[in-house]
Image (tube, rainbow, N blue to C red; front, side, top):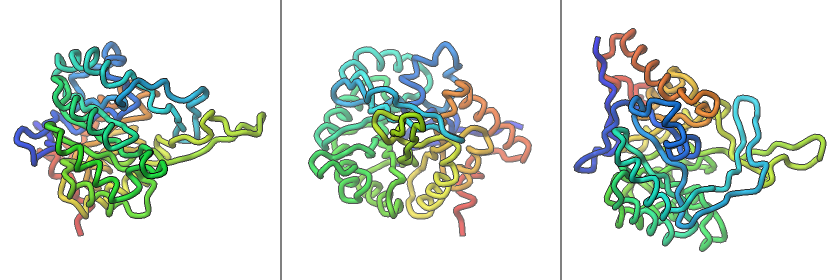
Length: 310
């Protein structure tokens, strides 16, 4: 039996954002895609999300900046990247030649930085969409992350929306008391879709040194340990907004991905597990297809949001 895996992550946009299947790779875990091109058949993916792009190149934090934890990992990379100029000059021309869409993840430390980077990338061939990482400190607001305040999240979203000609996805932080309020705010401000969740702050202490292991002291927890939290947040947001959602958090198998789809996500991103097995995302695609065939389900949309209904 043939099964339909295609999803549209930007139905409000004239051309949409069509993925051949609902499986993407998560920002920060798949580089710019070029690093995996010799290891993975990129054409089998639904899409690729680049590592974060900032206005200027960043060296990131000092080492050590990764620590393995039970069922996950902590990272404090510090948004290391080549900067928007190099992305436009060196990466985007490669992306433009791929059949798989590339979504550029964008980070910034002021509204103006977000706007400038997004405006330039949205006009660049090879960039299919923008994923706005609002888990960055707002230097104009005493360093509080944009994603922790509905007003700040809406402000940066609306300002980027004005200059962004490609689909705009906003990536939400889990470190809030009411993720639904943030989700509603950014949707009202013009987001075409939402991705959730980002990492959760954590710490590992080195017993020998009696000090935090990471040079940055704290890092973002990702991996299977956070999956139940992410599934719950997707479920909450799916019941409150009417735009497509992308579920992120500890997806290692097709069964994990299917939980997110049932919770209300139209697509998912595979992150930490790409470090363990570069082909995880492709194996998830194959597993979803097998499940649909075994259950005699012709279209993946028949599953999306079933668990989010009253």
